[in-house]
Amino acid sequence: MANQIICPNTNCGYRGLAKRKSRGSVVVGLVLCLFFLLPGIIYFMLKSGYRYACPNCGLQLSVDN
Image 1 (tube, rainbow, N blue to C red):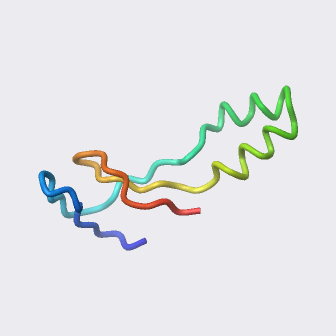
Image 2: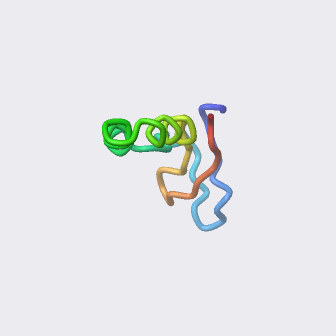
Image 3: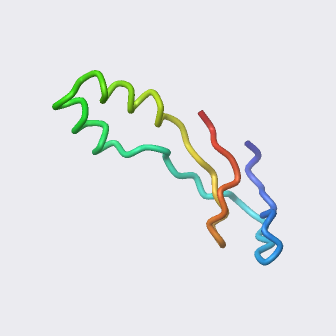
């Protein structure tokens, strides 16, 4: 994904860097692995990667696996 974004929200119009957030929670994944190994592994596989959002309005722009 490019470093610079232009927010597609007509009320926002932000130009700059996107905010990167992880898709899953490490704590939830560790608890699942601690008590239920297979669901924990599946959770980490499905929730790996990041999602990018506009830091001004919070609109999700894309998902990176």
